[in-house]
Length: 494
Ligand code: HEM
Image (cartoon, rainbow, N blue to C red; front, side):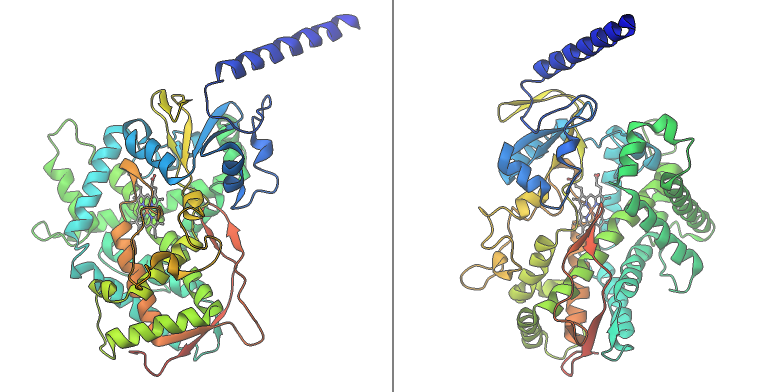
């Protein structure tokens, strides 16, 4: 009996010594919650996880701290100065996405959002160029958004002020903006493929950042062979890719080489142009993944911000009234308006920004991976560490916002009521991997928001004092399903 007992004791001692040696070699890493063998400091994160968990950790450990996901260090950068010092000043070491098994399986290291190195640089640069060519910043894209906003107003009008669930109509309109840009066409809301496409995207969003993703990243070799929600996610990814490929085939037959009309046209042209370039990453696999990336990044974000906008307008009638007054005074009854009008609408612009700050739709920033040992603020961030620029912490930092925990448009207004852009509005990330859809997002939110508030006053259904503002916490944070009354306005343009 004593032999196995001694063996176990010796093994345990060796393991503990190995663990302590590791802890000692990591003494220069940023501080953080106690690291335990095997589970790291996850014990501090998972129970009672809330959207404020990271804010509380920053209060305790400072603006740079380490959480151990098992044996992998995850360094969180909080506070605008720390984020800038990391992902802006040392951008070259922090511009990679983590190559976790789940990300690898999802993105195949292609496209923009999950790729790295040469592929990422080339695909990102080219996508930005195409978005510009398609009219970003000019009237081209605005017309498409106006068309979708008009459809949305008509759908809401059909409810005649009775309670309606806005989630499907809003998501349909926003998804169709991206469809117009990528495929050059919008889809009928009854189109079964379109419905499946939206469901597929939703399956992926729902899975990301859950326990099962963590499990997949920890035991990929096992999970690949087991049934579970990850199988549904990969089936969804395959559906989106095959949808994209079918659209690419259609474009190959019908496209105009002289006048490219949409993202796919431009990309196919680029594949041809760069056929002889050995460094070219332009090919149909990358095209298909770019389509998935633009789709995922450009639909769920805007949809959920607009859904939050309706909740906040219904719950804050005083703010809603002020927005409508400003819109009526500046735009009058003229039907058309453009994004350029934002400068004449400081209060409305402040409200649109405050909605995005107060109901920040990501749990934190999008993770990066450190590509080389680097010293930041006196701490060592080791090569391979995951780095999270914690935008939520910056967006709620009392140093920068008048009332961070309150919905208050004054956060974006100066004492004369003029709109002020703030560096701390870190919504779109920072450094070399900032969001490429920032301008599109701003235009979309402006046109949708103004179109809706010109046409309707939003109210909670009768008998409901306030619509629930508690978020559902996934990769994106969004409102619980709700109904709202869109009461037609006599002064609206519709
Ligand atoms: C208000 C809406 C949006 C928000 C809050 C948002 C936020 C973000 C954030 C935080 C990142 C990661 C940046 C980083 O790593 O520092 C990102 C990346 C990205 N976004 Fe957006 N985004 C929005 C809308 C859009 C739209 C409309 C598009 C589509 C054109 C888009 C396309 C992308 C792409 C392709 C990336 C990956 C960039 C890269 O890895 O190089 N986003 N976005």
